[in-house]
Length: 147
Image 1: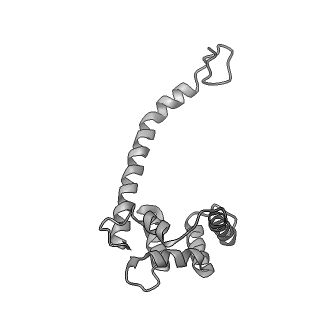
Image 2: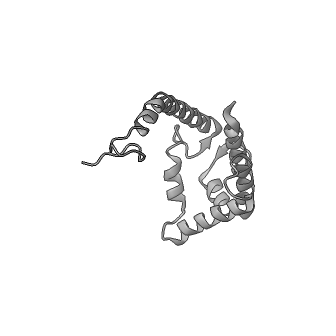
């Protein structure tokens, strides 16, 4: 159940939670984004579930270069910007993200994903039918209509 995402989120949370208090602070998130060991652990764990790159090192290089491009591109990763981003998940406004808050948004995202999947499943046959229609009268190009 969950396809491994729940475990991935738990692992990511634990890797970032330096003091193991089950709360993520601004400092822990900032430290994690600047720590090569943390980025390596996170990249390895994500690659285990989603092997979208040839190996975890390639994913780590991508993550590192992405962080560097944000920092080097004029956008600053500072306490204020991290705190502002955390507000999306910090429901109680205490300046920390708890496991409970992460779980809440994970569950909300899962429900939305299931709703979207259901809609796609319902629309799929209709889209397939329209995709095979020859609106040009000449055949072969699928759903294409010249006005």
